[in-house]
Amino acid sequence: MGGLAGCTSSLPFVGSGDFEVDQWLTTVSFEDVLDDETVEEQYDDADLEETEELVRMFSYVEPEMIFDNESDIDTYAPLESGSELRGKVGVTASEIDWALQQSANWEYEFDLSYGGSGTTEGSTTVLAGDFDTDDVEDALERWVDDEFDFDDDDDDDDDDDGFESAGSQGDFDLYTVEDYAFGVSDDYVVATDAPALIDAVSLVESTIDTKDDEQNRWTDDDDGELLLSELESGGAAFGILTQPRTVENELEDQYDDPDDASEEEREAIRDRIEDWEYGLVGQARSQDVDGSTTDICEVFVYESEGEADSDALQEHVERNRDIGDDWATLEDYSIDADGRVLILTGEVRTRALF
Image (tube, rainbow, N blue to C red; front, side, top):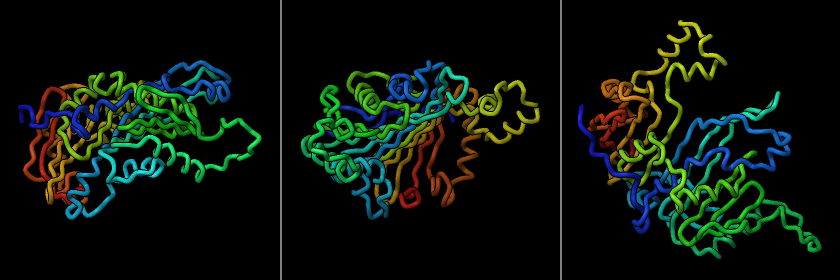
């Protein structure tokens, strides 16, 4: 099982073909999108002592692939990705080139004696297509009118609670309402519904900067670069980066000091982590539908080359190729190794996948 697999291109070229989807995948930090006003109100303007990214993930779909193969796919479920945003901006799945959803989970701790720690998530959706920005703005205003019950007092000129402009960022007009923010251009719509502590406009701006200014991309990170550089192009894809799956990391979630754990506890945790997933830090899959069959490429990135056990992964895949399993109907597959990366390529029946 030596040798590099045939899955060597990056995420698919889409639209006009002059950019790649991975240009949108952002590693923006918690500090970059922190809502200072909320910190001042909820945490008495306390200092942020510590923050750590726990998980980063994305999902991507090209509607054209689904429509072109609908007799074999027999479901529109993949098109649910981005459907909420499509509804807000007044476009249908057939009118966009692709939809991308991405998110990051952070753990944080403020300098407080009580209640200053927790976790939160920042997520964005990006639609690519050919948009009329005036039509999109009109659709957003209609959505706001239906969704929110603002005071329509004509004598009150303060519209701070309603749908309003938030300036611009490059080619994008920015809008905000409540916890939502939108970036609209002729070619893309970017949006977020930010939770407490996250500034929605900052998150949209940072996502746009990732694409336009080549800032804070997945590919700037060693694990992200390995994951995406080995991922084959396809009309649907998803990926995740996380903390390494190890005994020590599991113990850190349970103990203030992992050294307090007994040897029996360590052995029990080690037994729960299968050999193929030990040390796993990233996983991604792309799917390219061609009628009744679909080519898949799945990439596994490990913390070290020694943990990239191709034999263990093959044993796991062999046990999970039946209907309902992770690799249902998988045939003609291979698993190849390249340093700390394992790459699985193969073919499945389309209906088993979708």
